[in-house]
Length: 414
Image: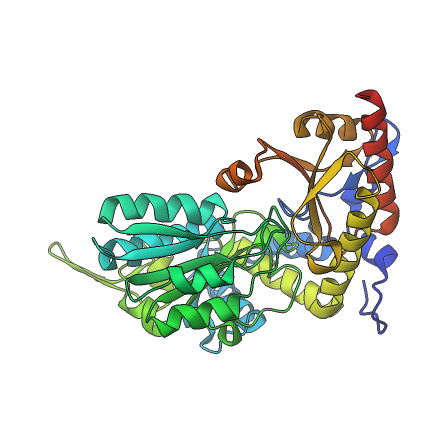
């Protein structure tokens, strides 16, 4: 894949880097529209993983031999690369590698929240939160006596910002919000939320799992105190996530996990901690995954994040328009021209799981269920939705195949 000069992506060239997209099931080429759950990984990133194990495999920060030094340099540089990618000027000291966004949420909740929250304190979330943040802060609030409040979602899928301004008070210690809803496709006004939080001396934590893969993100422009995202949604490997945290906050926080790697000095009586970010990366870390994620960032930036964003939004708008041609299809969230590259919907009385199964017979891969947003689905009044989500390698023709498969399902259940 080579960088294209025009705004339109050369999707055909990009798809050549993803052999999995050539797979066929029952004679039909797969149409992969489950990218909000996990994106595919290009050959260039797979090669980095393989090359690491073939040529550099060694533990980091523990050996004086050549292989350990090479692995350590590559792993440390990967932190700097990811920090640069999201605009963290503090470099590696502000970029902790975790397993995923969920672990990043738990790290802050237990390393900061357990020590800082107490009765009378409030944590403000949104009604569209992923379980990664909702469940985590819910449980920490139970342990500390803090109260969790929720910014409502309007009928058309946006956050009620007037309600947010009332809910966030001087008792609020932290506001946690998804940058992009994985169910509604809503892009939240995170910078505005951060301003409101900071006006009340509260911290602001952004779940960026659905934003970092498909749009330019600058954590400092947003005003995020913490920002989390996952590698497997942005062409990287599974098992690697990232937590950005402002240096002064991370320095004051106690470690979340204890053991090897994260220590400076240990005696039988006490221990001291390694410098940032290593004090939060206990044990043998995600070395190959971190190095490969840096390669995924290189791949994305070679395409251009602004162009990726436009491509996704155009596919989402096209899919929204095609889906709303059916009078028995309900699409959830904002209108087609104001959403990221995903659409959640239901078809008449067809359960989302049944619809997904029928689409699978057409080799069309979507997600069906509550998408780890059960409370939001309760508010929508549905047990589950079907979700099609797009990425750099998807095409309008694949949206047409989705629509054809949905129409077949409608006829089957008519």
